Image (cartoon, rainbow, N blue to C red; front, side, top):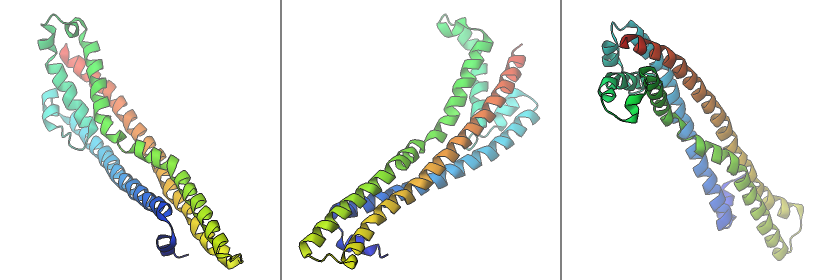
Length: 220
């Protein structure tokens, strides 16, 4: 089937549908490649940063050795140690933050640091979900619109043979296939990235308990 005929013989709406699906496909694969690369890079960097943390001779050395450029775990370590170092300064003030215990203070800030470190990995997921949900319907709309205009053109021309009907309707049906072609990778990638982010979150949460225990112990 020659897709070039869609752009040569199709009307503006059908052409717009195909161009929109092409743009969605490009956006989908761009997000898949970029987010997969970042996720794999982050997990590898986290393993390195965890080893560096436990091999450090002190909390200060661990903070200096941390490289948060690609590792959300290193980002959490750096911000948590900074909050620990400023606890004494905050405790001298008469505000609400000075009225909580060190453990509660660190739990709150480690949780906030972990949320902040994981936030960039959520980008693109909404786009994938939206493309996966809407692309089939956009393709179906293109098919319905194409069949409608194909039947009108056939009726006006007076040619009711199978060859005259099959060609234009077949070209219109490509829109549905194109919509599915765009939607299926988007849905599969969304599920895979959500699972990957959940695994990354569980790793950070597990390390956060050890980090809190280490920082709390050093405070006493």
